[in-house]
Length: 339
Image 1 (cartoon, rainbow, N blue to C red):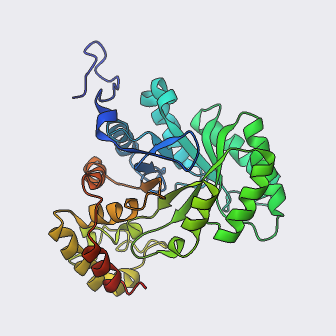
Image 2: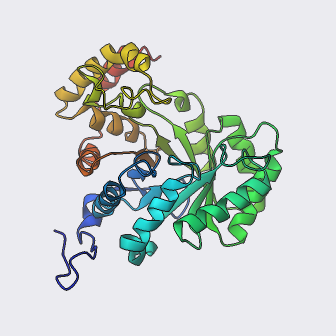
């Protein structure tokens, strides 16, 4: 039960039972435990969104024991606005609990004009992190990622930049995102020689996108690194949102570039079949989709993006059932034509 300070009714005091409701998993061989469900701020935290909604979602997340909040320099829109919104939420609500939080941000995609606002140079990464810290009002982040491989900049330069960022006190740990297995191993070798605390890889992973199973998960396990999955619900396709078609106010209905109508329509029959399996398990489709990823202990956490507090609560309930029978796994694999 949440306790309210009657002398200051607007002051946020988190649920005192928050650490009893969440489950945590060790991130590779590091000292860090992450919640199995983490909050991603890719959507619904930009300046185009309602700030009070973002504030309520953040409060609810912390009440549920979600300690990990994941951002990037270009989250919004516009670029940088998710970090600014989160900075406001920190000042208003969460700053007294900063020591209980694990905050990450990233740089690697297009951020500002000119030759220094993209990819993986030392100039870009260090400058971007300075800007991110300013937007959030923080002295450091717990985790800083290189957001994607850079085909032009030498990997040594990018990894040395991450190492220097840790040594400067601007980040406690580093990670990489969207790297394949081979580049991940190369990055780990460089960072290992530098003794840089590289602990995690963030990769796209869902029932509809299983590329990490081919080699990356094995590589990360061998290296002793964690893995956190983004887009685990395939931008909302693995929910009950599209079971009856495409609502006008949905992501696909608004024709956003990262989820188009034809993507949804091409998978609609499989979505409906997966939903029947979820119902047989006593779950919503979204809960089964999250539980299916988390059944693999090599996955440290899944990042969810939500538009309401209720959605977040529903997602956390996926932790109540992460066990799958052999028949259910075979049924899902057969439905998705996987191996």
